[in-house]
Image 1: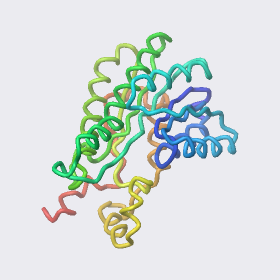
Image 2: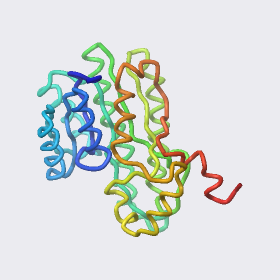
Image 3: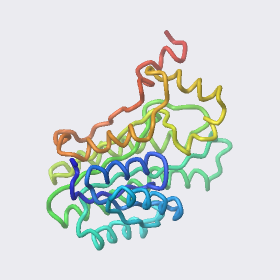
Image 4: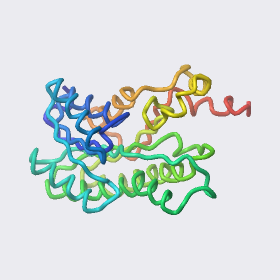
Amino acid sequence: MRLKDLVVIVTGAGSGIGRATALRFAQEGARVVLVDRNEAWGATTLSLVNAEGGDAHLVVADVSRGSDAARIVDETVRVFGRLDALINNAAVLVPKAVPELSEEEWDFVLGVNLKGVFLCSRQAILCFRRQGRGGTIVNMASVNSFYAEGGIAAYCAAKGGVQQLTRAMAIDHSSEGIRVNCICPGWIDTPINAGYFADPAARAFADKLHAIGRIGQPAEVAAVAVFLVSSDASFVTGASIVADGGFSAGLSTQLGIM
């Protein structure tokens, strides 16, 4: 119960890493605000948290809209009385290279993956200031913040931006008692990757890219988020925590460079 009674917002809580994070935070004693564009997915996460005796509230919202970002924080304070931490997890992927990307698809990916982090963080920081006791922001970046992959240009651009935005916010707001970090997962068994992993050969290839011999599970990333929000990480800000099963450590070998 490391997070007992903390109030935490988790965006993209309807599936994957977001759902696992919401469940883990509830298990650690936090009161969780679940945010997702898909009401049915969010409601499923809400029922899972409630089934374990957790305390959660669902907000159906699009993080790429400023009005929705403000509503998320306002409703959090209305329901739970305060805000202690924000987990910017919501993400989308359009698997295309630049020539095939439409302007609308670019805006969609950057809107959710990067602008959404900006909008929600801005509202959270304003709330932390009003409360006068600091707070914590954890952004979900990616190994694609460091390394690009073919065919996902907008996603790579957005995740690189998330990492730099994390560092900038950490510098700007540390004096206010606000810690900002990001997690950089490797390949994780989530719905965003389901189409690729449906091919057994592709799944086996992905497993071999990781030094520990398998892709990650959402709960393993959620555990890192719990650490970053907890007091155990009181001296950690502006950091990019890589949780990739050794993917980046062995990248040169995987590519045949060494």
